[in-house]
View (cartoon, helix red, strand yellow):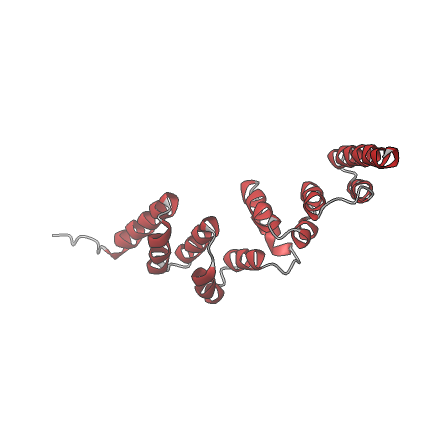
Length: 168
């Protein structure tokens, strides 16, 4: 019993030290220290995420794909998504969005269930001047921000379509 409790104390100390090292930017040492505690994939993925080692985080726990994407978008660093090497469907769709791959997005929009990702797909179609597809996507989503962007795009098209008034 004493051996087991000593091991638990050691693991707790190592885990605490690992997170301190992460906070100090000592990623390699932190991950090594954390691995000494035989962590769950979720704990290890969290450490990789904190250390901005996103591929490792996603490869350990696929749920981190959405967390990584959300974090990068909120920090205005979404172009870093293009550098990810992981073979993850969520990340692949994001790369299609950022790369404006309309052919792939036409397929993606039919299978993607995530509302945030669907809204980004709708925006990609808007940027590609495909208002009809963006509207179709938003008819299922009912995303207020996407609705406003569609209305603005329609207004812009209508303004361009109105011929200039003839001078008498």
